[in-house]
Length: 611
Image (cartoon, rainbow, N blue to C red; front, side, top):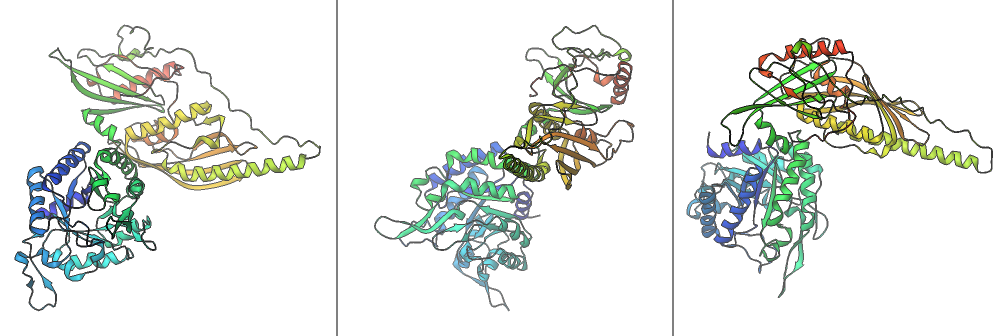
């Protein structure tokens, strides 16, 4: 496989996206090397694939007085220096087919009416050849670029529909080059202005190739800036670059094209639409976070933590789940390896630190503020607890008050009814829009009453703060336990005036090979008071998909869906040899203890869950 195809495959599979970035035009060798060094340092830190961009000649300047660059020969030498000095692929644009030819001599292929040439100039240096937007339909130029064998990035003309890019990309493929990508860079909106239509990010995919979003040129205002001494140049809206970039990565483009300068105000070309180098890292971090959620990737914080885990075990009992994380660490001044274990209990939030000792075979549960109890055998595992939690009953519905037969009572009743239906509509719309992203972002709690009651088959919680903790725990454990987890709203209906019923389907890809089916269905029943605020949320189960080896314990997906984490943690702590027995044996020991004890009372405080 040739180097162009290897690079093309690496870019089109990049997660969350790749970056084409650099100053608009080559100003000097020192400046280009400075920019390449600093941009590479940022993208290397973030783990983002980078192709360095700059132009040797800006042939399409608005004014003849505008700076054009060092020219073909000198410009290519500088770009080659970037490649060899910083080991970076480079992208640059061409404006004429002759720029792609050896010694500026076109090569005419027998039997065809178009001029073609082989790579000896731009094609010899550039890893990606960029076709400017104004030239996206120039067949001779497209075919000449394709003949170089390099990756071709075609910018969509400001005057073109996205469907035009299907034909442009096809011209590259018919010339024998499959390595093509297309770039959205805005659409003309009257004179001296461009807009970005987010629909184009989807429609342009009809070209069947990677899609790049130019988040800087798309904010140009052509001929919108007057030059000293006469003439005009392009203006721009630099402050809106983050807005357009956020939109692009949220939709899910494959790459971002961004012109970057260390001092945009002094840039000789397109200063108003170049992003400041000093703000590049923070913008890329934000874009990567948005793209991660869009693509259901692991959050960056988890990616940094999870590689430390050398083994992962899952222990299930009843409707609760214990996750054991094992990794190895060394004390600074002790030449002894220590195995550490971090455990989480569902439906509880608190982290538990366990020490593993070679000859220990005990599991000890106790209150963390008290000293550890003596070692006991696994057959007599005990659970200690404090401060029994009072199970609160849901408050009674607030029905409509009797109407006082006084002047104005009818108007008051009508106003209350109007408020009810306004809030009812808001609740339905909010739930429909937010439930599918429940594992990605927090909910809007304005539609709930402060004393809301949450009821599932196992627990009852009251209060908006507890309600928030429940969904925080769902998001937290969802990201820990699953590489990909999502909730689909199947149906929303209103069986009565003050009730909303939602049927949903939960599906996910576990992080470890658990024996559980890939989906679980349930219903959420919301009751509203006379003001249209939700005062009760009840989860009902439609089905349980049990793992084969752990019947009748519910599957992992079932527990995550129906047993949200309690804000009242139970703590485990003490010596345990996790390696001395299988997790099934551990499960049986804990289950036996729970069966004999009957119930486990939780501590009534909340510990911060972090690492």
